[in-house]
Amino acid sequence: MRQEAWWQDAVFYQVYVRSFADSDGDGVGDLEGIHSRLGYLELLGVDALWLTPFYRSPMADHGYDIADPRDVDPMFGTLGDFDVLLTEAHKRGIKVTVDVVPNHTSNQHAWFKSAMAAAPGSPERDRYIFRDGVGPTGEDPPNNWVSAFGGPAWTRVPDGQWYLHLFAPQQPDLNWANPEVAADLERTLRFWLERGVDGFRIDVAHGMAKPPGLPDMDPRADALGPSHYYDPRWDNDGVHEIHQMIRKVLDEFPDAMAVGEIWVTDEERLSRYLRPDELHLAFNFRLVLTHFDADAMRTAIERSLTVPAKVGAPATWTLGNHDVWRQVSRYGGGETGVRRARAMALVELALPGTVYLYNGEELGLANVELAPADMADPRAKTSGAEFGRDVSRVPLPWEGDLPPFGFSRNPRTWLPMPAEWAGLTVEKQIEDADSTLSLYRQAIELRKTHPAFGGDELEWYGAPAGCFAFRRRGGGLVCALNTSASPIALPPGEVLLSSSPLVDGKLPADSAAWLI
Ligand code: NOJ
Image 1 (tube, rainbow, N blue to C red):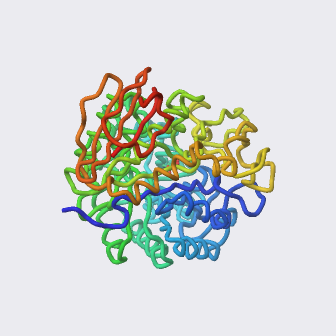
Image 2: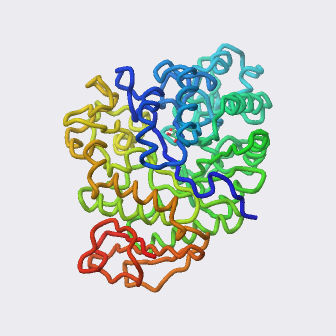
């Protein structure tokens, strides 16, 4: 049954809090910075924000290592700042959702500190996954699991036991078989819901449950997922009970929602997370994993749409986030990369369901090449610079001609900002009708107000090689994409918007257009 809810076809905007706007001059973004830029978000037209973790943290993984999930880290402000941000966002009609990280805590969380101080087999250790090692003196880890950041997923403590961390050693995995763990998450959810948040993004929502006996993984399956090889680290059936628990809490709060970060591409497995008593939304990462090619994109869209068809939850599209390369760079970089990213923005915003944008994509930002000494991501340290995620996390350019472009009053921003961004600031783009920012604003506005965007089903037209065109059954919007090298004739209709100017009425290479 179709669920009519505010998130049904909402445009969410991911604020990577460290990199959005810095109000206090420490070179790191903060809550007051977001508050000061709410006018921009209103102008952009987004319906809701997803704020990355701003909780107390030693920042080993930039906030995804949480020492206290029910307090704000002084680097980002105070609980009072959060309340102001929430109230002011709501006044502008913008919903606010926040991250929760149920798979692990920081090693500086009070629970982990007491686990370290306690003996093997103690209740304190049972909140995490401590095990004896193998080999005559327990010198080898309990199994062969590797961390998503590279290297073994186990770290040995002085008394000889090992603890599991699917991410950095500073992020010990919680033991979800221990009821205290669920009770604590419930407290966290209620804490933020009672303050008025509209929902959550659930980190590693396919993690948490671990299979009995912690069997070895196939060593070929060494990434975060998805994988063709046996990988008992993720997507264990036990995880669904956890999502049911989360949903019960959310259901007590009218209109609260949750989206899961689920790196599972098998549609049948993914749709299980969206059963009526589990998550409302699950990111579909197929578009992120697909190169700029009309056939491949069409397949990705069609496969993604089988998930909502199975369970009736909205499709949840995204082209980028703080963990992956910026789409401009994925599609080849330079001017071509920007053209292609603009085209894909129109494709994404034409689709039925929910869309998640990542801050900076509306400015057409590309990856930033950083010197190894400037890299801050723990994954760059353990897996090598080419796996570093800092490239898509550089602070946003707001105004002026020189770094830090109004992001901060401190020229030493937490990641250096490139001087070449002078032409890409919000200030430069906002009045320029041809800018990427203007394209996003127009596209979001049309999507919100034009009746052509109705209907959940797509009808595909025949199209020349390297191109596709679909029509939304219901509303009638047509979206055409040209990934070939030459201009193509458009299907009949009035052009509503195009990602680059038409040439003699044709859609040029690396472009998309909307028609009615
Ligand atoms: C997914 C988050 O998006 C990523 O940034 C983080 O490193 C891992 N989960 C671990 O929490």
